[in-house]
Structures are given as structure tokens and as C-alpha cells.
Length: 141
Image 1 (cartoon, rainbow, N blue to C red):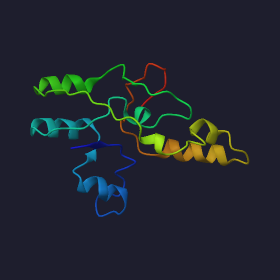
Image 2 (image 1 turned 120 degrees about the horizontal axis):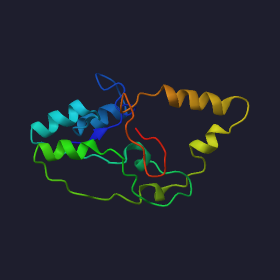
Image 3 (image 1 turned 90 degrees about the horizontal axis):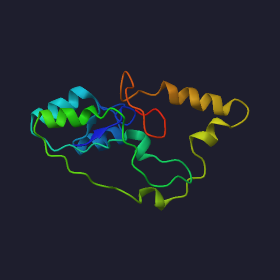
């Protein structure tokens, strides 16, 4: 079962679009409660340790692992006796050219950058309190 970012799962209950697609494949919103329930039920779980930051790299950025400084998901998996299988998914973004990333969008003129960043800050977070920071110092959700 996949754990998906809350922004992806918006509209999950009776909604349309990507939330229903993810749900049809068994995905649930990523949070500690869902992670615990899936582990307790003996489910196999797909989780990107670096979260959204790892899944969506910036323009001209190299492939690398963004490991959280407090990987509590490992503690929970060990507590449940789960087997942890590392895997890699590279190449998806090689199918298209990133012409503008968050840094470029933030610099857009006429208030467009500020408006875009405000919308981004208003998106649901994967964690109510962000306790993880990636090795590049960037906060992650």
C-alpha cells in the first residue's frame, strides 16, 4: 500500500481525479496513524523516506537520497517486526524537461511568485509538526 502526500489525497472521499486513482491502487494519506494501522495489519507499505522533497527534485539537481534526520518510520517498522526493503525509482523525470522549479516560480514578477508561494504554503502538510530536515538543510514534509 502506498502512503501518499495529503495534497495528492485531497478529495479522497467521493472526489475525482488523482485522489481516486491513488485510492483505487490502495494508497492512503501518509501519517503516523495510517502507517501504524498498515504495519499492525501486516500490509506491505511503499514509503519514500525523503518524502515529497526526494520525489520531486529541482531543476538541474542530481539524483540523491534525502534521508530525514529523524527517521521515526524506521523505529515504527522495527517495532512491528517489518522487513525493510530499500528500492530506487530513478528516471521518471527524465521523461520531461523541468523548465521552472519552485525557486524560479517564486521569482515571477507582478506578484505571481508571491501568490504561488502563498498557495504552496496553504497546501496540506504531510506532518502537523515537521521534525525532519534533509541533509541539504531543507525542510521536508
